[in-house]
Image (spheres, rainbow, N blue to C red):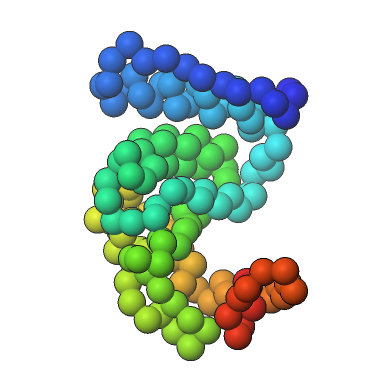
Length: 145
C-alpha cells in the first residue's frame, strides 16, 4: 500500500449498521487487514476529543466502538486516550487545574464508563514529554513540551 492512498466509502443512509460497515471496511482496507497487529499488542486509539460536545465536534462514537471491537476480536488490548483542549481541561506538572477528559469522553457520547479510557492529564503522561527550547519562538518559562 502506498502512503498517499486515501480510502473513502459512501453511505446510502445514516443508519448505524450502514455507518458501522463503512467504518469497518475503510479501517481494514487502510490497515491491510491489520497485517501489522500481533495478538497481545496494546493499541492506543486517540480520538478527537477536544471538548464534551458530541459528534461532529468530536469523533463519531461508532468509529471508536467499531474499531475497538475489530482490534479486540483480533486479540489486541485496546486503550482509548486523549486530553481535551485547554478550554475544557488544563493541567500543570503540579496537577489538574480544571476539567476532566474522561468526563468529556462520557458527556460527548463517544464511549461508556466501561471503556478502557485514559485521560492524559490524570495518568502522569507528562513525564514522557521532553522540553523543547527555541530561540526563534516565544515561549513560557517551562518551554514547550
